[in-house]
Image (cartoon, rainbow, N blue to C red; front, side):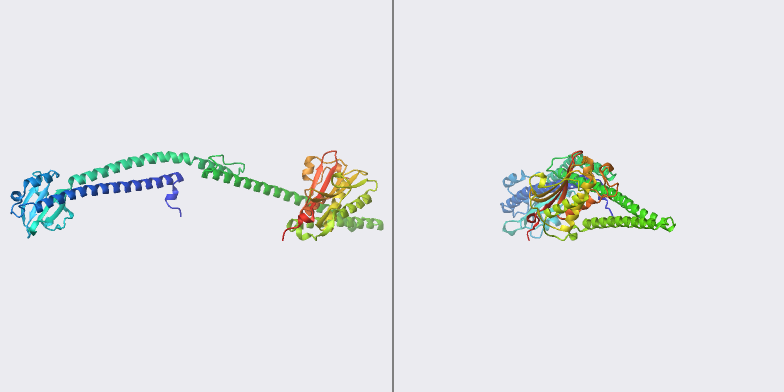
Amino acid sequence: MRGPVHRFSLRTRLLLITAGLLLTGLGIIGTVLTGHLERYQLGRLDDQLGMMASIIATGPGTRAPDLERTADAALLEPALDVFGDPYLVRLDRDGTPHGTIRSPQLDPASLPSLDDLRAVPTDGSATDLPAADRSARWRVVAQPASGGDGTVIAAAPRTDIDATVAQIRASSLISGLVLLVTLTAVGWFALGRGLRPLRRVETTASAIADGDLTQRVPDLAVAGTEIGRLARSLNAMLGQLERAFADRAASEARMRTFVADVSHELRTPLFGITGTADLYRMGALPERADVDEAISSIRREAARLTALTEDLLLLAQLDEAPDGQLDRAPMDLRTLAGDARSILRALDPTRPVELTGPGGNGPPGPAPAHADEARLRQVATNLVGNATVHTPPGTPVRLGVGTFDGGAILEVADHGPGMTAAQADRVFERFYRADRSRSRSGGASAGLGLAIARSLARAHGGDIELTTALGEGACFRLVLPTPDQGRHPG
């Protein structure tokens, strides 16, 4: 459950906390100052009263029954000048007063009572006593008279001290309240200005929550400040979110396309098989030759369906655990180049085939690799098949093999029509087929050969690169790490 404080905005909470701390600090300072002032004033008064009591207690004639007659006026005058309203009294041993000196301005009712005076300790320590009419407080010091003949008490009202302390407290309270109000107003506007970047962040977050992932937090402060670091972190997070959502959308789009393409590719041979079977069931194939032709058609479509299913299964396995589909062993890509030349000559004896080094430079060279030869032979077959399908008969093909820049290279380059940049960007996508004018297969290919070839190459830690331009042919380059590159420290 949310507390009452959390119902306020951050600005209000910060201001309340700051005002509370300021009020506490002002209260502590005011209390300390007034307490120190009060102690200082009382200390001075206590010294004066102690001096007065000492003069009277040790002066000549203090044993006389009447303090007014026996006290030496010359000794009292310096002490009396210190006080505004002094009150001196001598008590005998049984507590009976034997003379007093007081200011004529003092009302007898405002003096301390005799019972309170008799209870004052005679060790010279100061004591506060109330007036008999409770109108004021008195500061009292008592000392024994010389010779042990009674007690001398010196007292003075605390009225001036209490008034001064009260005035200081009132002044501190008023000035503290004024300062608190002023600083609170200034803090309200300062916090509003300081929190303005957070409101910009809030606005941006609201726009993002509404689905606009292109929004970014503007540069609100210097990079080294908390707001600046927050803005950078948020923008980095937003960039990752935008890319993640874009990748997710692209993945969903690819999945929809993949499912549609798979459905289409599977439907075509299935329709052929179903149609041929229906013709036979309806008796539309009376001749043995017609039946044989139908069976051959079913077998072709079944073989096509089997090949497509195997390709899809291989792609799924490579996506899930690519290295688990490989049986690696030392080999040389020159073996694949020789097989590829044999395949090209078998498919089109009129097609010139040239065997060179990488890039057409020099003779073919060694290209060692630690790889699955059977899987790489499938890669080479797919690349060669792509060259024969998408180029006219008799088009020259160059096979390059060797090492370049620390990697083992196998190239299949043709002098066919080439591809546009848009086609080259998509040529490795599953079920993608370029313009039919480039293909002599009449649509027989499902468009998985190059996708499988690249997946197998990447499973080996390599890749297939494409260099092409419209009218300038295409060069597919299988690049694999050499055994030294693929060896990891154990």
